[in-house]
Length: 155
Image (cartoon, rainbow, N blue to C red):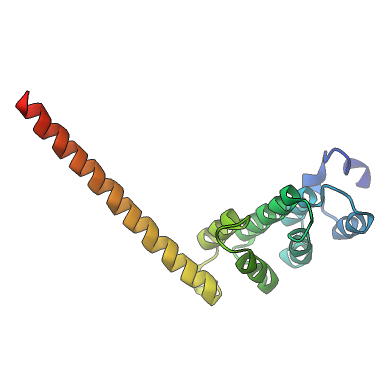
């Protein structure tokens, strides 16, 4: 299986299913660890992938760190939950950084009752903000329609 994993080009890394191979690549200082950790999220148990995802979130390459956050979002989608370490890492990054989509995926795919307190608060904030934005946009549309209707009657 290791022959399918080309660490230089990244070819095949989304299919990686061996956490020890990822660990060995981490020790060697390979450059596509974030890409490979997405493969672990898809192909391994959450318990096996989680510590590696968290480690990849601290990689020096910003793009590879971004892939690690993508892996966290994928783990939330696939498993409907995350480990305490992943919740902590997402909270530490915050909703304005690389974790924005992973946090959104977590809020979407993890049941509310299973979320830790900070994520429940984020869910409430996000839900209220989205509802208010929807109302605002609908009122803008209604006002625009009324204005166009009034202007059309004058012509």
